Length: 226
Ligand code: SAH
Image (cartoon, rainbow, N blue to C red; front, side, top):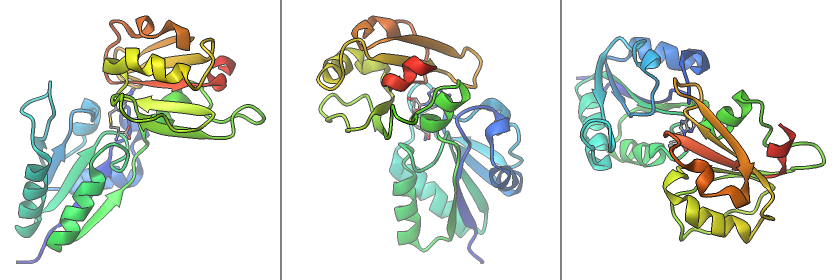
């Protein structure tokens, strides 16, 4: 039987208006859609094929990454067109890189369909520049949840998954920025329950108290311009 194909699709960080035309076409064509919990329900509703959640904590059973690889390869070998739907972009903290390696090793045809990552799209949607002429010439995206990792060097920092690590983050941010440096916590951008909190490095961790997830943190002088 002919091999099917796997599309690693970025759904963007918010609702269907931020979906690319290509992602929409693939969602309409795919016979099976494996999706994670950061995909907006209105986007899932556009998928015509069978929908299989491959969730992490808080959203159905946790599916080990190797099991996702196994399923993708198995479905493609049955001749099916499969979409592996990621929140944001598949290649930004989305394990898309591991999936590419697994599909390559198995000889399964695949294609990556980029999506609008929350790291860039969420601040942008809310009118927050990540760079600004004369004020911020660089930005970096990193995970906020691992206190053992050093923060990257850039004028503006975008930290994903920060909510459980705000105390440790404050200490690390204080090594790099003055305590009065502005920051923004952006939660559920483009989703119901969207919430924005503006403050200063010195306001952590209290500023994040009770904030819903998913959320990200933007730190730098640019936040004060918005
Ligand atoms: N691949 C995704 C990121 C997955 S990691 C992307 O490119 O966007 C999950 C983290 O992304 C969350 O903890 C949060 O920091 C961020 N995130 C995703 N969607 C978000 C949203 N709608 N609003 C705020 N942060 C979001």
